Image: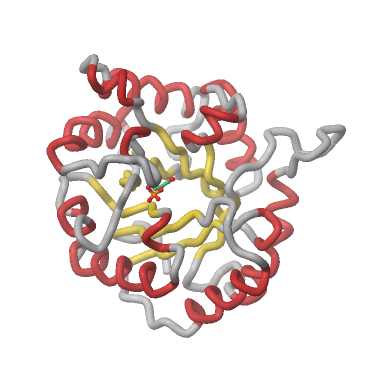
Length: 251
Ligand code: PEP
């Protein structure tokens, strides 16, 4: 679906640690039959166990991109429990989610590691989706723009300006079942600050408690180029309905 100019909008979901193989295949089979609106690039990010099964149904080069939720920065070696970018590529992933706040909070993901993973993805032709976002304390201190800009700068250190990288702005306080949905006013300044950071325009997706109720308003924020969704897209009907909203808002 992408052309040289890239899609005009993105809609993606990470399934996090949900779905059996059967559930993943069932979801993917429904997506395989959808006529996607032009200009919209859908992607799904299954757990590692289901990447290959999903990519058999939604193969590389087709309308729906398949991603991985994480990968190591080294190509191979003695890293028990880890998977590498060449391995997720081999399984059919062409996008790599990097630096999600849950990985930063629980698994020691630092800005430095995020940068190593961005470079590893680019080395292998996998599209990095870099997740950034401030926590509630940082927001309360008025530091959101500074914190998120610094995360983006660190993620992209040494990365060529021409490299294709997606950014997902996901305020930590807005994510998950305990999250407070962000309003357009909450996010406008941060999105504006990172969309052209370093002089290169990059697509910015918004994520955090996106639902059918707030998707259009969030898409209307200047420089928001798509949505990255958790719970509201874990049922395939939710994903398809959100894709339709994204399409409508981006024409
Ligand atoms: C997320 O965890 O990145 C996310 C966007 O989740 P949710 O939509 O469920 O808040």
